Each structure stands twice: as structure tokens, then as C-alpha cells.
Image (cartoon, rainbow over all chains, first blue to last red; front, side, top):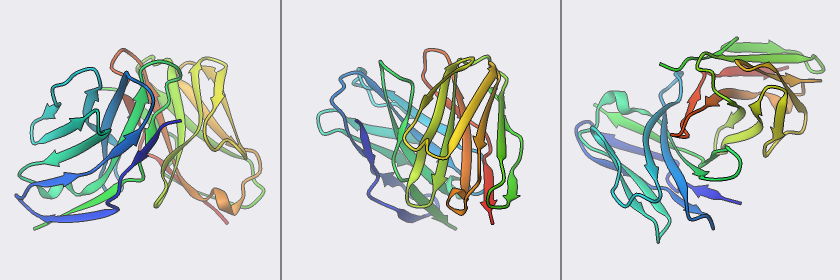
Length: 115
Length: 112
């Protein structure tokens, strides 16, 4: 069974600064997908970024990028030039490439951007 | 854009009531999911469905059942609601090669 660990329950950072959210996972699979999802206060959960394990290049989406270290089973999210709208719960999630379609989620990190 | 619609944002029920949570997606996705979200526990999978009338238990299926009679609709049923089922319930759907799950806005259920 896979596990996903987010060791930072809460973080806060000043607007315009850079912040990194940590995620580690445990799996015996070789092919899998990793995701960061964002859940703003009282709003819908949306995908931030997606990484395929067989791709060595780290995924980026505008101000969001990941540091994917497959050997260390680490998948951190970096948010550059943070904005007030980045305030949200962030969940790291894992999905094996084969087998059932379920996602395994971490417990989340509550990020607050301070004006 | 994928749309996943949950029928209620907030619901208040009494202990012992039968509760239906409805979810509809408009992208013809094969896979649909029900999660429960609790503070400090993240999202935990209750049930999922990979096709019409097909279902599989997730990590915490006890006290819940599901129904998928049509591809676009996936219902979560609490046969006899209990106070420990007070929670946020999230529905998601997934299809295509990118393995991305799309979420509804959630239903916050209070069982009194």
C-alpha cells in the first residue's frame, strides 16, 4: 500500500516571497503519477501540477514548480512570487500507473499568504 | 471544462436518517469517486466506480453504500446516519490518459 506524508500542517509566508511545501511518499511501484491539489477556503479542489514518475524533468506551471526526487521519494511544491490567492489547503497525492484508479492523499498543508 | 456537480453544499440530518448525496459529471468519465475530508486526516476514499453498476470499496466503506445506474451520476448513501459521519464529502471523476481527478465543490454534512 502507498502512503503519502506531508509533514507541515501549516505554513505562512509574506506576499511575493517563495515558499516550498514538502511531500514524501512510500511505494514499491516504479511507474506512477504525483499531483499537487489546491483547495481554497470554501472553494473547489483544483489541480495545481502533475508529474509522471518516468519523466526526469520537473513539472512547472507558471509560478508553481516541483522538485521531484524519485530515489528519495520526495515531491515538493515551490510557489514563487506568492499571491494572496495562493492561500489554501494544499494536498499531495499519489496514483500508481497500473491497477486501480484510486488516489492516495496526504493530510494537507494549510498555506497562508500574509499581505 | 470538466464540471462535477454535487447536489447540496450543506446538509443537516438527524441520527438514523437515510441520506443521499448526489454527484453528476458532464465529461463522460468512466471513473467516479467519493471521499470524506476531515481535518488532520486529509481525503479518505469511501467508494469508487469504474463503470456503470460497478463499484469497489475504498479505505473507509463502513456505514456507506453507493449507486451508479448511469455513467454521469454517482450517489453516496448513508443507510442510517450517525454523528461520526459528520464531515465534508467530496465527489470526483476521472477519465482519459492524464489520470487527473476533477472534484465537485463538496457537501458539508452535519448529523445531529
